[in-house]
Length: 189
View 1 (tube, rainbow, N blue to C red):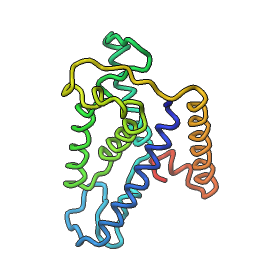
View 2: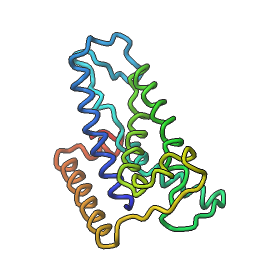
View 3: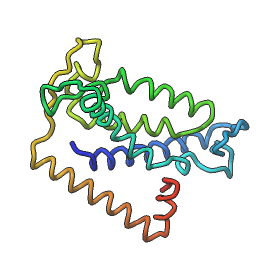
């Protein structure tokens, strides 16, 4: 899969997850330890969904590929195949980010790292690596990174077009509602 589908799926998943967490926290008792960013469960305070920076989410959705690109280009790690995934596509890399994001969210109600981690996990779930447990669970099942083939070219083109249309529709909706400038400035949708 290519970048646009990862961004669209990551943003949609984090958007839905933040609203789900808001719904769950609405029934929880008020949190008197407000964080520096002002996101609390108190009535009348900003919702978690309003605190997510979707620019960070978009970057997080591409994080596994960015890490592997740095490994291959910057450090000369050789790949046997253009479809091979490396450290960025493993739970060994992504799990610590998830745990740190959960901890930061729990202590300070700061959703930034958790939203980046959530988007990175969506990348793993829609990449061919999900069908390759030796990569996903590396190094538990061996030290080699096996080849993981993606979608065929026509299906990849369809996913790219669908993601581009989704992103264009979201951008148009933000512009139509007068919130595009706010998105560009602070990543809120």
